[in-house]
Figure 1 (cartoon, rainbow, N blue to C red):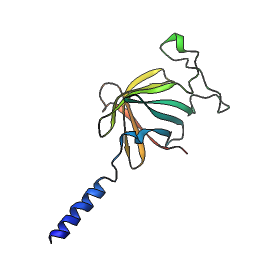
Figure 2: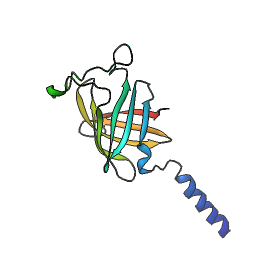
Figure 3: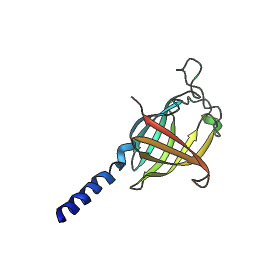
Figure 4: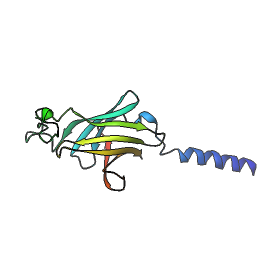
Length: 144
């Protein structure tokens, strides 16, 4: 009976870690489930950042040429290409998820607080103003 109990506890430990993530699991290229944006997330010092690789709203009709950052609140940045800019900054790993980040939405020119987590090999990015409850979540899968 004792060996069955030990086996049960071991199995519970194995299965409880099925959705566990490691700190650097966020690193890589991710495509939104809507297939409308691709971002690359990378480590920068103790934080994680992300940049736009492609997006329906950030490229011209040819699907390749970057649009300009014309809605940026900083007038000096309005002539830069959106593709390649760092739009996700300051994410910190807290042992469970990535928090304290900022996400710049170039098509609108707005910046939001954000947090990110990974579950079942999907990345979830929640952007919000003030409280996380008052936000939106986008889901992503690894891009090939």
